[in-house]
Image (cartoon, rainbow, N blue to C red; front, side, top):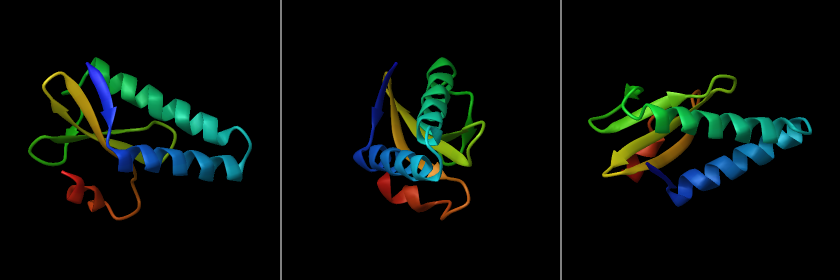
Length: 96
């Protein structure tokens, strides 16, 4: 499967990496690596994660309070949001 990011989701990832890097050198890289690992889990088991909506799913990262919000279209995984789990839980709905 191919993985594609909505531009807003890619921006969220960049901003979160910058934020964590400011908190502690190397933490931004750790966050990015965790997100990529989470996406690998999604690719391996695309239907294995919680449904939030009819066709939208969320897979949570293991060490950070974030979830990868995604949908499956044909042979593509579309990343809708890299969402902090304690802020505005449904803001991403405007993107679908």
